[in-house]
Amino acid sequence: MSISVVVVDDQALVRGGFTMILRTHPDIEVVAEAGTGLEAIEAAHRHRPDVILMDIRMPELDGLEATSRILGDADWPVRILILTTFDPDEYVYRALRAGASGFVLKDIPPSELATAVRTIADGGALIAPSITRRLISRFAEGPAVNSAVAERLHRLTDRERDIVVAVARGDTNTEIAQQLYIGPATVKSHVSRILTKLGLRDRTQIVVFAYESSLVKPGTQDIGT
Image (cartoon, rainbow, N blue to C red; front, side):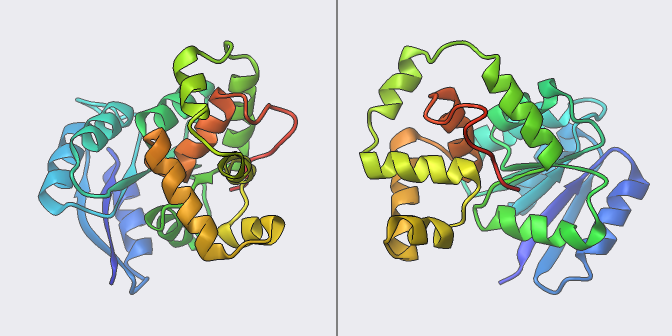
């Protein structure tokens, strides 16, 4: 089955460029375009896409607020990939907290755009290296772990904590399986249980939780793309 995509950007030329690139791939179908956050919300509910490519700075409603509203209302497994020319800390953290599954800059090579969409559609995490460094710095300067996060951490078994650390490091299910001497299917089951126990959407939010809970500390682990 093809991956359905909505492309959101306030510049028609940029939208058209992304759409043209994605439509060269037979497994990806661009079902709609939108130029504002409000149009993005309408397109999301009308087309129920698998992935939304979301710009940040747009008129009427910005991409971060649109992301939060779409994910808050969605009754289908939509995932959002933030695409922007801006990468300051404020946007990185707010986008991930809003539930975005990935965050890449608009200078991503065209050959990598389809890969990014497939990664997000498959439940993976995608964070550009420059954004990763800012994210880690944000947590390094952040406050101590609050009681709510600590309580959620206690829900996990030791093996599940090991897997959270590995996910935060950017390891794939196959790599985690090799490290822990278990099968990839077992890793996938563990990840699913972790998401359920913690009330998270995908692997990107596992990365955020790993740092918020201090299970992974800045400077001791790295996040892959």
